Image (tube, rainbow, N blue to C red):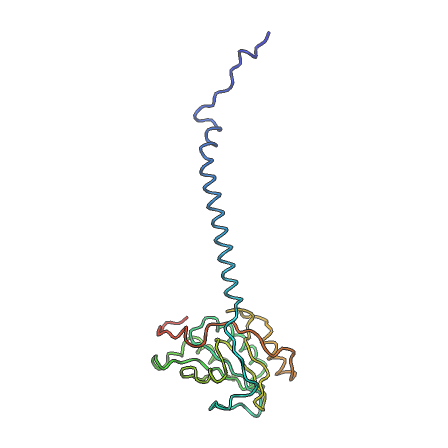
Length: 227
């Protein structure tokens, strides 16, 4: 006997799994689209951040000798290190950290000076931020307020964290940054070059990029808060 003709196809009730999956399908598509958009946003954000961190500041041609117009003189007994810093540049904290490592070799090896930009348009003490306090804690370092960036202009310093090292005759031995990227402390070519000069008297690297905020002009705000 043939029973196949009496068998009706199964009915899809309203509560069957088939109808539920069909109803969920549009929501699944929306969820997938939102997930994809989120991933794109994360990748874009990370790419933008990396590009910012790895983009060096503006550079300028630096003379091979200590500027004769400067009222400050180099040390004739030991090398002179000069760092220019903006008191409200967050990137400069890493530069100060690297300078502290250099100074740990012994303050007697180098005459280190940090010149913090100070605008005459702002109140007295405007430049004495947390960065100033951090720098003041580094043994053997002299802090100087550079009014309106006068000295920075003589040394062609345009980016916060820009560091120069001169010998006892006022000859330039090294110039550039001592971090590997913006706000990133750790082993880098600039710091290694200065350490090599101080310990061995020579180095194979005399110039590096400087990663930091613009030293003059763009961060001359009157905010009293710390960055």
